[in-house]
Structures are given as C-alpha cells and as structure tokens.
Length: 156
Length: 156
DNA sequence: CAATATAGTTTCATAATGAAACCAATGGAG
DNA sequence: CTCCATTGGTTTCATTATGAAACTATATTG
Image (cartoon, rainbow over all chains, first blue to last red):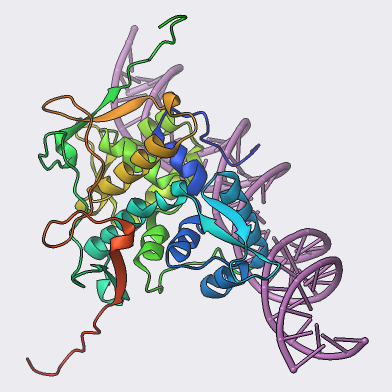
C-alpha cells in the first residue's frame, strides 16, 4: 500500500466527485452547512465527531472549494465556514441519497425527516432525469458516449 | 477508537445511505455493474483494486441487498453478481455525482464520457427536483419537516 | 484579571486499506 | 484422464486513516 488510491486523474466523473466528497463525513458536514451551521463547534456538536477528524475534513473541503472561510458574522474574532456555489451544488446529491433511503431502506419508519416544498409544505417529487426534449428517462434509456475530444487549434 | 462510527441508527436518511454506500469503492462497483459487469475478475480488472478489498465490498453489498449472487449465465460453475432493484435504484445518485463533476470540476475537459439519451444520442438534462404540483425547486425552496410519528394502534 | 469557551493540534491505540503471496476449485488442451 | 492455466477468492503483512482523549493557544465573559 502506498496511499489510499486516489481518483484524481480518472476520466470517470463519478470517481472524480468521490475524490472530493467520497468519505464518511464530508456529505454530513455539507448537510449541516445547508441547514445553516457554520462554526467548528456547531459541526462538532451536532455530528459528534472527533475534533481532529473534523479539522482535517474542513481543511480538505476548503481546499476543494466546497467551503470557504469567512470572518464570523457575529463580529467575534473567530471565523466561520460557509458553502461556496460548488458546495451548494451538492444539493442534488444529498437529495438523491435521501430518496434512495426513503425508497429502499429496510426500516424507513426510522427516518426522521421529510423534504418538503417550502411554499406548500408538501413532500417533493422524486428527482427526475429528462432528455433534452423533456422525456422522462430511466437508466435503461441512457447510454454513455465518449466525449468528443476538443482539440485546441492554434487560431480560431 | 472502537470502530469506524456507524450511522445505522441515525434518523438522517443521508447518513443511512452512506452507511451502505459511503465508501471509496462501492459506487464505482455499482457504476461498473450498471454498465454490465458482473464477474469478480471483471470488476477487479476494470477498477484495478486489490482483490481482498473487492471481496469485502462485494460481500457487504450483497448483505445490504444491493447486489445478489446468481449462477453464472454462461453455464460455468462460477457465479456472478447482479444488481438488485435496490442497487439499480442508485442510478440517480450516480447521475447526481456525475453532473456535479461536470458542472464544478476544475478540469472538466478530462471527463471522458457524456450521459446521453439513448434514442437521440443527446446529452441529458440536469436532474430536476419538483414540487408535487410540478414547480421546479432549488434548495432554497425546500425545508425539512419532522416526519409524523405514525403510532401503531392495536386495532385499525 | 480570572475563568471559561472556542478552535483547534498532538499523541496514541485501533481499524481499514492495499500489495503480494498463497490456495482451492474450475475449465480447457491434449 | 492428466496437466496447466484461469477464476475467485483468503491470508499475511505493512501503511494509512480514524477516533478518543489530553493538551494548547487565543478569545470572550464575568
């Protein structure tokens, strides 16, 4: 073993995202950040995780551009962690994970919360994958295509 | 340290799904399974991972009901791993991860593939989250609600 | 100024990961 | 039927990651 294998150079976009968020804690930290938490102690309290691990994770997330540090909004000398647009972009992943649990968990009655539409207070629909023309797609309706290699030209 | 913390009892559905698929390899194995791989050697070859780790992962996925073993379809005495409905249900998560990379990766030109609609061969749209009535929702349009605790009644 | 809270870092033990060697059961060639 | 390669693992061992607890430095509160 040299290192826990890294997927940085991999052409697979799934592998690439796992490189940044594919560990046990990162997505949970993101989830809490989306709910408004921003301070080290808040994360540590809410998640009950070891402080050294939290420290390492937060640093890594900042390096990956998922979180950014900012001076504390309450005027204190401490700083806080806030989601960048890249971090907020993880929302669909959290929703997908949630919906998978809701649909397939053996004991779904233990799930404490429901994601609702703020206006109506009604549960949201399942995530939908659609074709360009709007047709709903399932996995069987999709394929992977090699991305056209866009060669850079000297002029134009 | 006693154990790598488990999220089994947690009420958060995100944590619950991470319990099953929140490690470095599981989702990549799923991805390959969705592309049609089913044999131990195929996974090992394609992913280039250590055999002992693959062995542990496959066993865990079978235990979690994501994969099932079946007699080999080619008539040999070996068996193969195939996705269960629960496993196929992970598709939106893979799509969400892919789209996050596509949108936020620093070097998106390195991404090798595009997910297309099989009929037209055109790239799919971004995953859409909609309200019951069909309105498109962003994170800001949603909230978490406590799930009503459904008490079990003796009769009725 | 003393006490306490915040945000970490350090130290140490244990668990997970990975590479490589090993092994048992097929499957195939002759 | 016999020998050999392939498949599908397990075992062993070294290294890395994780976690609990103690420790520390700075900031805030009384």
